[in-house]
Image (tube, rainbow, N blue to C red; front, top):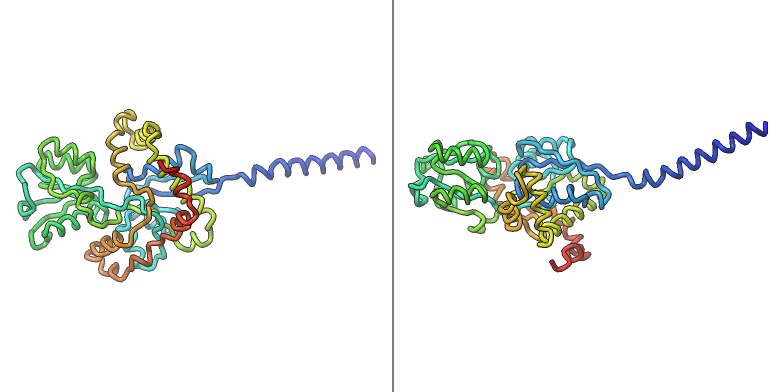
Length: 338
């Protein structure tokens, strides 16, 4: 009996020790969050840095970053609850919001259009675009909306001036189409623009330099998920902001270029120099999403989908999460005046 009692006592002690030992492991378990991005561009650099430099882990997060081709698919995944956060163009979100999805845009990853309207060397001014073919990526995406904004800014109307908008793939495909004269003009991002200008092609309008308000890419989530998991989202946003601070710290330039080279699949960090410059140019140190830029998006998407005209930018832009960090001095803390 004594032996049985002794064994029972030892077993009880072992069970206590096992649970005691496992408690810290359970408490230190990382919270999972699924984030989907629709394009591999330099404005995602803070997200890549936060993951690759383990900043997310520092804040207790296991962020699964998914690359999903197509902003509309990312938006649908967000609305269905398959992901918690979308890094996406508002142009792909507002139609779902108009249909009843309660989605909030809480961080402005890119608060300006990265596109430039580039044309054939013989096209020297806006009037020369009349009757011509203009290439974008998918209709309803950022390059398409940027094309509509550019034409409006140049006092051109696609219907009136018989300008044919064409879906012609990403920058490499649009560049090739220009060189093969399959396009008369195209919307291109920074590096592609630099390359084509060096070959004698014409820059008709740089939307970033024109300072036209435009919300290009945001971090967005369903409001019910944010309300149900405030600590998770607070940690996530803090980690992303720290990722911004890491990018803007010039001492980290080489490290950031390594992150860019890895995620953009470049041959080496030196090949990331232009993308690094683009990130610094395009990112804001305090990445608040903008109401004015979102209103621009709504205006042009509503031309394709009239229901979107009822969407109010003030309703879908939620700056409260960043303002909380700002008010407590978090930005000053992570930037440390750098």
